[in-house]
Image (tube, rainbow, N blue to C red):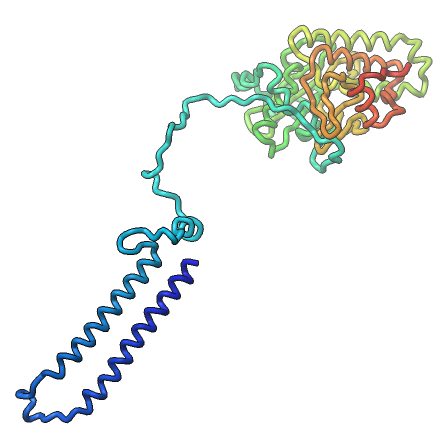
Length: 405
């Protein structure tokens, strides 16, 4: 709008100037047609020049006055005052102002303080229901919540650089499985703990892991590092001096679920052996020891316990059970939730979303009950007659259904 008004004004000015020049051109032939006597030029009277100069002066003065008034009106000023009927403030604000005012013109009521420490509260782990599966590696539902659930002691992993096991003394033999972190491989370690050759399982963190994933990688094996109990998996070493991070765990024959499934071919003999009582006692003892020292298992189930070659049952796993037993989980995006093993209070469910809450010792007791049911049924699927949505509705939300006998 501003450009259009300026253009109209310039057009009026040009028309006026053309009219003035036209009048001057009309006068020039008249003056050129007068007889001039060169001989009497110096004595000739100059009375005819006076009206010509006067006419030209008046025309030029009128042109300057008119142009000046129109130009000032365009800028919103007339005779030194702002024109009230022209909303120039809005025009300038909408069409001209493209830079902020200089910093010197900005006044802050309060200066920001950078001395306050930044504190992060753990966010609730909310997952939309019916979101479908993701192409990314599945991660546990409590993957992001573990670090905020209890004081972390991650820093002491790096207090003693000499504690790192020389990674050149590791030899990988075969891949055991994959998890959110990367790979778990069976291998051998030379001179680990003063033993010539030891069979081990090495968890290998992805080289592109984020800082948060580095912390979670260490945090989820913290119980195996600090606890020493015959029914808890042991951490034997680590390699943290460079990427990729490596965690060295004791080897085992297989996970407990696989062991029980193999016994389905001859269940009577297995039940008569008394092995079920032995397994139940071992798992309960290991879990009780974890609780005594402030740890809770975030995914207690038969698939997350192992049996050694000495027939010793231990609570612990290598982080590969989600990929190995996807059918045991309710998958939302890239999150796997063990709804059939979870206590109702550990999952808050609405019609559109699931929120994974902190796993408590009491919630572990519920999961232990489901694990004991797995022993008695040789790892049948809990609530096998119900779909995942029906389990969420009837077990998690309504809290009405219990496991069948």
